[in-house]
Length: 295
Image (cartoon, rainbow, N blue to C red; front, side, top):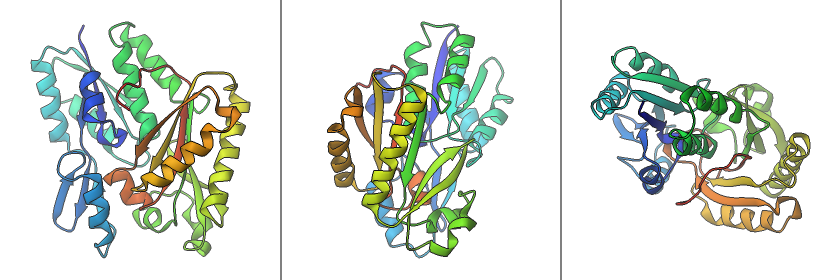
């Protein structure tokens, strides 16, 4: 048995990390008018945010086509892979998982195991790293079972803050947007994934107060799930605002609750950035062990 790991571009893993861990990637797309850009290939994150600022409407996004998946699976089959663990952003906000399943039916000689992460960004990337670093150590059935356990909230979770809900509401990615429409331009909403859907949980008036509330929520999760004293991974993710991410990491490092936490930094790329908007910021954390070389 020879197992390949595939993850979609919303994991935002660097080329270095993917190469080190032999992870294959497939791109989602951002669409400005009639121009389509493959995430991670045709447009940089900086170029995307600059282009979005000058674009009068919200860009569209789309999942990889079934044809793109078939080409990747055929390539992996030719390279001698018998199995593929294909990890993707939540099926509740994208058709990526569905297209992976459809493509799997079209390519003979290779077994495709699709994992719906029920989340996106760094948590998805960490699951892919765990799979890549354990695929030659553990039986595939055991590894798949572990991945479906590790994606649960008691092992990893995330909270993120957007400047306003305009992009999420326009894009239809927010499940309970109506509850917030009255203050859509005046609040800093705190969002989370719940059963794979994006849910707005808090209405906060300033970014500083929203960040303080997120820290409270994370500490509550640490209490509830027994993370105190454990080696944890925490990622601060930013929407083209690296300075704010650095400042938040510096603040978190001073908190004794996070004394055994390893901090890394990532970003919201074009597809996720389309829906969260510029200057969004978030925290994710995970309790499982992966080699973070390259972050």
